[in-house]
Length: 304
Image (cartoon, rainbow, N blue to C red; front, top):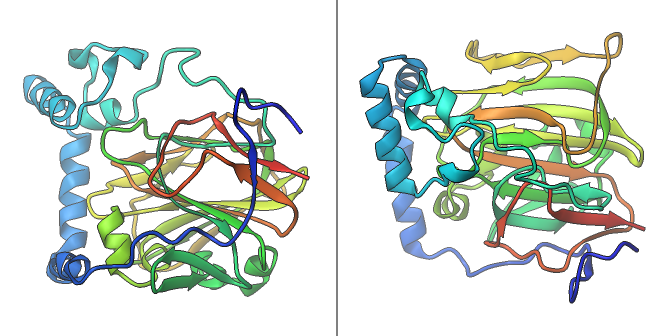
């Protein structure tokens, strides 16, 4: 067992913690999302975010930084005026050393907050009180892929607007497949997670399948309302286009190897990452709990 510092222990993976039950107002709060033209809003947001409009872009970024409390002191370039587009700002790099990588089998891949984590019950992933969804649905209907994670472990991590929006590797892995699954574009904030059944298996998503030292693992980049696109370091922008059909890429003949902590992708406007790991003795960081703030590179879990 590796030491995590004074007073910190590993927590045996267990069924996901269940926060307060969904209140009627959670369900009411998400009703307008069923009516909103989410696709059109997302296309508009993508257009605005990619536009290079000089002083207008700078004013938008300055407003966003003030509105959401973005910490520009840790950005590699803290000059708001240096970003040509909102996307350039939103996917900004951090200063070297801003996110040290912990000595842990698995490290947190993003900045954000913990939505849920724990054991997968058969093929069921806990979303919120009264809401589970299947691993098969999450990965786009591939039951053979989902079977690798039966009774395994998961973590669902939410990125808020103020967070650093690059996604990194929880451990070293070799990419074998990528699947773009078309879907809805609901918000992925905590209220929506409590109010929309099967949210993360309904929204558009990019499923990245890796082979690691302890077997296969998956990172799922989940889209949301106004998430203009998702990109990976090996492919570039995955969406758009949005053809409405499932698309898949195989990397068996051209494998991509990424080290622990290496960047693997990014959101152009924020969303959620769901991680899947196979069955086995996995102990999550005992400091973790639903709603807790997290930082990329911190200890996430230990095997054995």
